[in-house]
Length: 342
Image 1 (tube, rainbow, N blue to C red):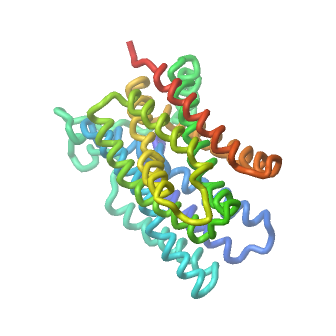
Image 2 (cartoon, helix red, strand yellow):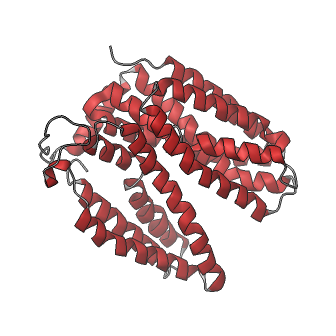
C-alpha cells in the first residue's frame, strides 16, 4: 500500500479472491485447491485484513481513531455472518460450486465500486484528515516499501514493547482462531451437543463481536489501551477456564452468559493493539501492526494444531481450555508490562 496505493491493492486483492474462488469450481487435484483457495484467496483476504484497517485509520483520521478501527474490524465480522447464511442456503439448494461462484461474482462486482469511490489519501480529494488542524500533502510512493517494512521490523525487534505486543497478539490468535473458532464445535460434540446448536452458539459470538469491537474502539479513544488489554485478556482467560464445566448436551443459561461475554471481548483486542503500535512507533505504527498481526496468525495456527493433538492424546479438550486460560493470564501480564515512549 505504501508503494502502489491503497486503492490498487484493495482492487487487486478482490480480484485475487475472485480468481481463487472461481478456480475451485474446475479443480480436480488437491494441490490445485491449495493454490486457488489457500494461496490466492489467502493473499487476497490477508491484504484486506487488520493491517489494512490500521493504514486507513492512520491516513484518514487524527481523532476518533479507536472508534474507526473498531468499526472497520467489526465490518469484517459482520461480513462473515451476513454472507455465511446466504452461502449456506445456496449450498443446500444448489451445490457448493454455486456458492464459490457467488463469492467470485461479488468480489468482481465490488472491485469497480472500490476503484471509483475510494482514494488513497485525503489529499486526493483536497481534504484534511478527520480531526487534523492543517492540510497534509499526500506522501510520495515509496519505491523501497518492502525494504522499509523489513527495516521497521528489525528496528522493532530491538525493543521490548514490540515483543510484548507480538506475544499478547499471538495469544489473542491462539485463544480465538486457534481454540474457539477451530475446536469449540468438536468439543461441544464430545459432550453430546448437536453440531447445529454448537454452530449457532458460534454465530451468536460473531454477532456480539460487532458490539464488542465497536465498544472497544470507543473505549480506546478514552482510556489507556494497555489497561484495556489487561482487562480483556483477564476476562477471556477467566471465561475459558470455566468452559469445561459449561459444555453439556443442551444449552444452559450459564453457557449463554459465556457466549455473550466471549463475543464482547473476542476481537476487542484489535483497537487497543493498533493504538499501542501507533503510540510506540509513530509513523511506522501501521507497518509494526502488520508484523504483530503475523504473530497473531502464527499463534492461531500453532495452537489450533496443538489443540487437536492434545484432544487425540488425552481424549478430551479440558486441558486445551485450561491451557488457553493460562496463556491469556500470561498475555495480561505482558500487556501490563508494556510502557509507552519516553
